Image 1 (tube, one colour):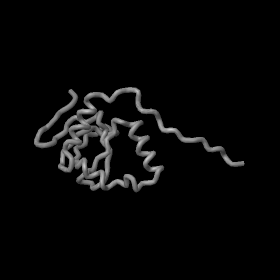
Image 2: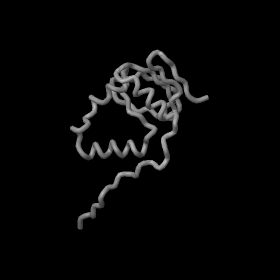
Image 3: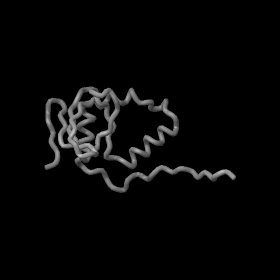
Length: 118
């Protein structure tokens, strides 16, 4: 007997508004566009990491509309469930990475250094 399949529903958008500092960090990184910027944050294991990123470089490297419907749904679900994670292009590694905006302590962009937290 086959297992019944139920329709998969995406998680509802978060009922909590994005924290103002997350929006500021997201906007600062987006303002770099194709230029390089430096980000300092704390990784999941508790170590501090400095990363050189190029925010606009990530877009062309992703499949976008060429991706399967399943991959596009997964990306949308990830965005809704984890709005504090920002996908970026790590210049040194030459690969996509995610930055937890909640743990970002420093962003250097356009010759200015922006510090966050205590």
